[in-house]
Structure formats: C-alpha cells, structure tokens
Length: 350
Image (cartoon, rainbow, N blue to C red; front, side, top):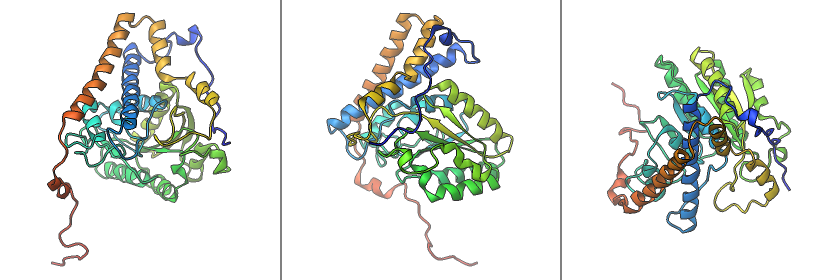
C-alpha cells in the first residue's frame, strides 16, 4: 500500500493556542470560516449531484484543502491573478465568484462561468482574475508564468499564483518554466497543493526527493514547506512570497502540505490509503479550527454562527435552483469564443 508523503501537522487544539495572539483579526477569521464553509458545502453538494447524474464529465473535489485557497486569497490583492489545475471549484469561490454561475457551469448551462462549455475542470472568471482551471496536468505552470511575464512587461506590481498538484511537478515543463522565471525574475508564486497522493500514488513511490520544496534549489528559487491545514500558516508564507515578488525579486515555490478527504475524482475507490489515515488528517480540519478560534475568543454568538451556516446552505441551494432553471447553450454557440487568425499559418508581408 502507498504510504502518505507528509507527517500529520502537530495538533493545536488546546485553549491557549486558540486564543488569538497573532496578527490575524476577528474579521479575518470570520471570513476564512465563511469562505471555507461555502467551499466545503458547495463541494459536498457537487458530489451528491454527480452521483445523481445531474451532470457528467470528471469531478474533482477540494474537500479538506480549503485552507490553501483561504490563506492565499487573504494574502493577495484583487488585481493579482490565480491559475490552477482541474481541482478548481474552490479557487473562484474564495475569490468571490457567485456560486450560482459555478453550479450552472457544472450543469453545462449557458449561464455558467464558462458559458457551459468548460464544465467542472474549466471554471474561469475574468472579473475576479481567476485565469482558469486546466485539464492537462501541469499545463498551467508555463501558462501562468506567461501571465506573470505580461505583468512584468506591463510594469504592474501584480503577482500571479500558479497552483498545481504534487503529481504535476513531474512534468518537464515545470523545470523549463522555473529556469526562465528565475532568470527573468517574474512575479509568480508556485503553489504545490501537496495532498500526498497525486491521483493515487504516494510521492515516495515516484521520486527520491520527497521534500518537494527542494525542487526550487536547482534554480536558487526561495522555497519552503507549509502546513496546508492552517490558513494562518498559508497566509504568512504567501505574504512573504508576495512581498518578494512585488519587490521585483522573482518567484517563490511553496510546498503546501494538505490532504484531500475524498478521492482524486469521484471514480476513485481510494484503495491506496486507510480510513484511519483519513480520520487522523480530518482531526486537523481547517474549518473546525477557525470556528474554534472564533468561539474561544467569543467573536460570534451561537446564533450568529447558525446564521452563517444557514446563509451558506441557502447559497448552495440557490445555486442548484439557478443551474437547473438555466438553459443549455445553443448549437450556434459552438462557433463563438473561438480564437482565430485569418491568415494562419501564413505571414502576410506588407
């Protein structure tokens, strides 16, 4: 049986640890809790609907990994860009995309964020600078770096976040990209959402280098491992990397250790790990952690927590209603949103 890559983060559930002595405010914890809970409930509903065959294609859930998005977004600014792979439902939610258009995209409806043409693996929101989920493993690494090149070329101070799974680091394009990004000091932050198993094979079975942060050493790229079950740890690591990028000092690689509670996709029987291992990681649940901090500091009453829970539940229910009542794209829509160069592949000389 495959063994897990990262040891379980140390438990911090004693009361003194829950008292907020850090730089993070009441508002930050409440936003983390609200956003992560919405991600979790959206994904749970998506999984139920998929089983009911309400929509087809592939479906990869982000359940358990929410702290990565929450901490990244809180340490970034709205003009920064984000790009990820096909486990892409939570990223736009964290950036503020309406879950109604996300659910409509799952249903393949014209009101979806990609007009019903992308489905689960290809969410996109230009207004929120979410540059998409991408279905080809590792393809987002050079593409996201290209966005960072454009930001530097245009003289902005924007940063680009490129997220990938631990399996994607095996792609040769990563090494080509890292070399160029460091050479040109591009404002890009590479985030490995290291959930230990790629599709279903542990890192130990695919490489001799199990500390994925070391991959950056070959390019003298600042790198570190981060506790991905803690939004605080993610925020602090991203904040440091963002400051470096905005100064013009170039990329950072963050190996963020997390854990997905569900399979790689909805068709994954998860025979490569035990139920006991999953349960151990669930003890570090980031949503429960934030709620415990909020309760310990008496930042919300029980009624206010219930109100947040009710709002989240209603948002998800409304998203399903919106999706099911939305129309499918017309056949003519196949000919819209197509990139075209009239004279390709010929070069016109004047």
